[in-house]
Image 1 (cartoon, rainbow, N blue to C red):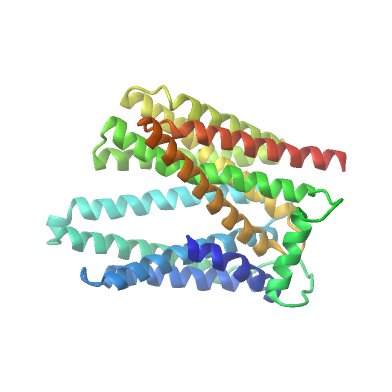
Image 2: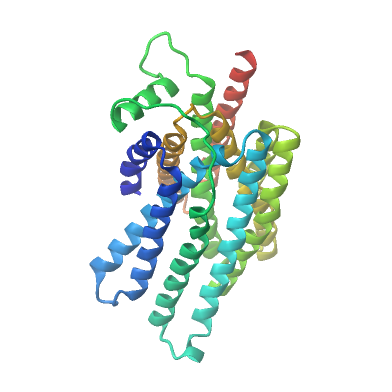
Length: 361
């Protein structure tokens, strides 16, 4: 996370200056896939090699996510961007679910293949790397439009600092935060909740209901498959109605999930809550990315998503830390959900400020 936070804004600004978003997607994806395959080839005694491969794969995934999002304005404009963003998330959930099924099936049937537990895990890493590589290669064949012909001057660092000064002029007197600044602040706050809530829900499920690993995998797969039509539905609403309206539906669903999670007392209730979560999980991510893609300053699409990535990780870190403190102080695994609900409402308010700013401008 530290490597991603340090690299993403400056690397994103450099990609913007070079207008090489498509190549950046391909390069980061190939590096990440190769790191996954390298992880599968590492002997169990190679601690440094294993740690290095995990770090490279994780950072490459973050970079690939940023650069893929920055391609959106080149591939679609207006309402078509909402549709493409939601379909992309839906396809991602489907692909992730299939890869998870393949990997867990290999581990479950390892004795049939004459594999040890470690060997089956290596095989699952290899599946992950090959899956990532194969389905990233078509990006090399797509012809991209030109979303911006903005010329860049100065170094990438100066470009990044100028972008931040224009977006969030916090230290400048008599300068109000523009609409895009409020939108970016709202997006990172909400996505920080999303990033934190998923692993914390898993922890709550394990500690409260003592789910076995196969049950947890089943729960994850249910979320993946239901998130697919949920993302498409929210994308459709965003296109035919409004992005802020679709975002409000998703945020209402998230508030219900965080509120109802406090009172669940059985495994069937847990599964019902997972279904509600899945319906709004991909939708809020896709609609926020569409908002940022169409509102980003010309020539700064990679920088926009790079800064968003850093902000999301920072907000996720803060939320996780407070979540842990609440858990330690109360001894109740669900106590931290209140913290996430407060952060969600804060992000919702920031998003409303962005819309109010747009109406009054």
